[in-house]
Length: 117
Image 1 (tube, rainbow, N blue to C red):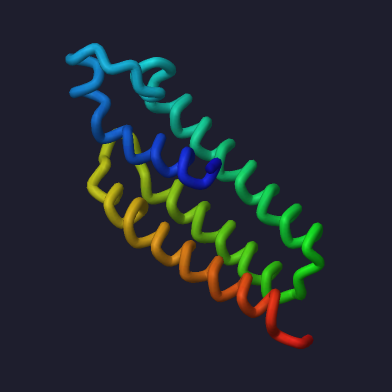
Image 2 (image 1 turned 90 degrees about the horizontal axis):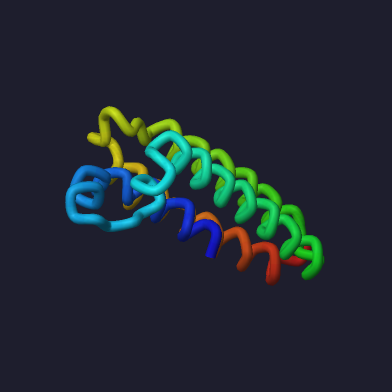
């Protein structure tokens, strides 16, 4: 939920002017684009912590931890790609990076659960 919430906040930055003009109370309109980016980063950090906790609780092997840190790196890249003043790379951040994250997560968790290491 925090992963999705984080990238949804980032993606909503491109609707800032529309939301402002039409009275839509999105997070970027309510708090401003800079605070929205901070909230998105906080959501992604919380998602990463929950990911680590899940791996610990289920005693998954090191493949999942490698995957989690790859995911963390991809989240950092996602945030670096999103500039509120120039949203040209928002689709790369939103569609491509999040696609990579989902693939890394499924592979890491399958290996973490079923690889006998």
